[in-house]
Each structure stands twice: as C-alpha cells, then as structure tokens.
Length: 113
Image (cartoon, rainbow, N blue to C red):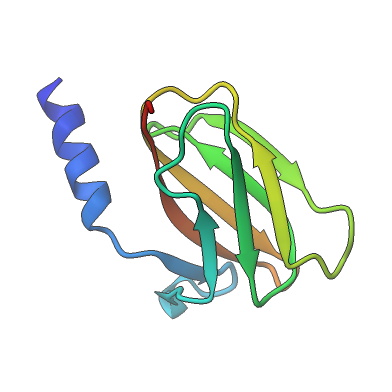
C-alpha cells in the first residue's frame, strides 16, 4: 500500500510530455493537447483535443494495463471522445498517439461524484 501511494504521488509530479519515437531525447512538454473533464466521474465521456491529427487514444491504469482504447476514423481528426464506463476512482494515464508518430502522455484523475 505504501509503495502505491508513493507511486501515485510521483506520477502527479511528472509533467506531461510529447515523445517522438525516433529519438526519446527529444521529449518536450506538451501544452497543445488537452483532455477534459479532468477530474472525470465514472461513466462520463473523456474528450481529447489537439492541434495535431490524432491516430489513437489509450487509457492505462497505474500499472500500465489498457483500460480503454480508441482509434480515430479519419486521418485528420483533431478531437476524439471515449466513454469510460469501467474506470474506478484513481489516477490513470492517457496516451495519445498522433499521425506524426509522436505521443502525448497525460494524467487523468477519476473521482466519484
């Protein structure tokens, strides 16, 4: 239990990044992609918006297990929504893959109403 609390605390301190798969050293802070609402209540839609075309969105729990994933249907989609009906209260990671083969990583908090 103590290790889980420390891991969640450290995750909250990590800034949000975009990553280019060809060079992980080129990580930069991502301020162009947003997820909302955050915090999210169970059973709500999660909305993702970006200036870049979105390829897919994946929601992971704190240990890295995929909870939900959705691929965009169009090549130039800059927003995507997912219905998260099976998320319990806690911290999740949202991994957004762009058409440019880069990723944005966001933190999502799910809270009971």
